[in-house]
Amino acid sequence: MFPPDPQTGDEDMMRRCFELAAKSAGQGEYPYAAVIVRNGQIVAETINRVVHKRDVTHHAELVAISLAQRALDSTDLADCTIYSNVEPCAFCCYAIRESRIGKVVFSMRSPVMGGASRWNILGDCKLSDMMPEVFAPPPVLLAEFLCEEGDATMRRSAPAAWAFMRARGLLAPPQAAGNRADEGANGRGYIRVVGWLLHALRRNLFDRFGRGGGRRRRAGKRPTPSP
Image 1 (tube, one colour):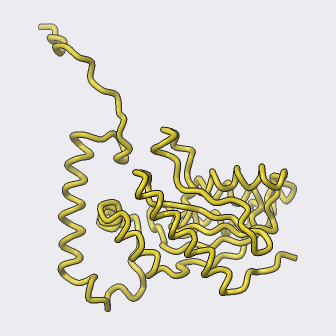
Image 2 (spheres, one colour):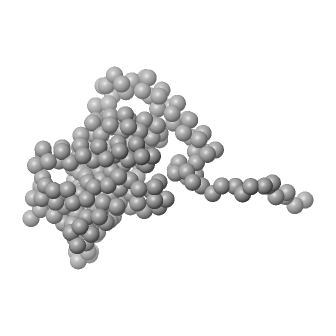
Image 3 (spheres, one colour):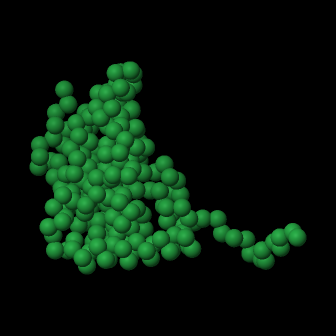
């Protein structure tokens, strides 16, 4: 049977995930990170790699799963726990299910892209019922764990990204956010202003999703349209 980690272990590993996510933001990456643990020991940990690798498949969770499978020389991670500072997207959740990870812990909920909140991939029993040779039953799920701490960490380390995602509804505010002074009218105004600035930059400077590195226009005059 899969032994659940003690609460203190979950807190330590999630805070390690917060540290890595802040590091990711400091390196110009998306502020996401993932940690995979087995029997209380870290098997793999990584930041997001989409920007640096210029590869949309390099989400933190996917990179961590790949590293863990290589470290354990197995595609079966049934006795492992994965920690993510933001709810894994549908793409990552399918990989989590196929790698048979036994427990998933995330901090901030993602209502638009989450593989538990919007598409219940993590809790889908049909996958394991129809293909038990490939998929294990749904993992143990610990959602919105230390979510206020995770939200505060992202706001400090990646304020522009945090404001953009909150303005677009990509991150759910912590349950107690409505009662906090820093989430009052000034906080909402900050979100709106930064969201507007990022929208303008994305339209005029960045490519899709603000990744940057879109195709540059070739030097020279634009072709004259035919009459």
